[in-house]
Length: 135
Image 1 (tube, rainbow, N blue to C red):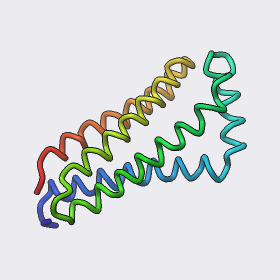
Image 2 (spheres, rainbow, N blue to C red):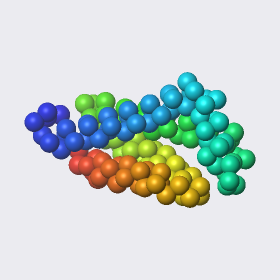
Image 3 (tube, rainbow, N blue to C red):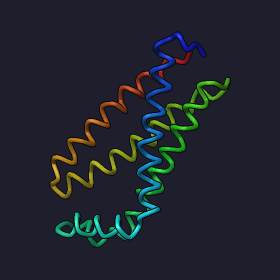
Image 4 (tube, one colour):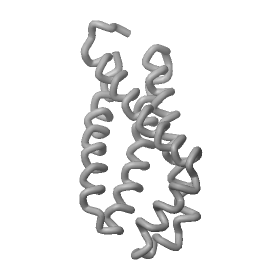
């Protein structure tokens, strides 16, 4: 760990970014489950995903929590010896969450929403590249 090393700081910030993104999203889905269910039912009502919202919403919530917790552990692991896999694993789970969300937006033909997720995915790929180097 070297706070003066820009690579270490970039790794830490990237992991914290995805920790906040996915824990906030997962917590929001739990705190306002009915509101989120109603939103997704409406959002996907014209697609075959509309009937699957009761199954898919808990699944994406779990994936988002796993991504947030995985990235949080990845950030902590930067300070611990022997956990070199943790940042990559956390970001890989985050990638799975983003690909899932992206697929839903594309199926729904919400191209603006898909574009936003694609931007997050680009940041994630860069963060994943950063984790290749362990300080």
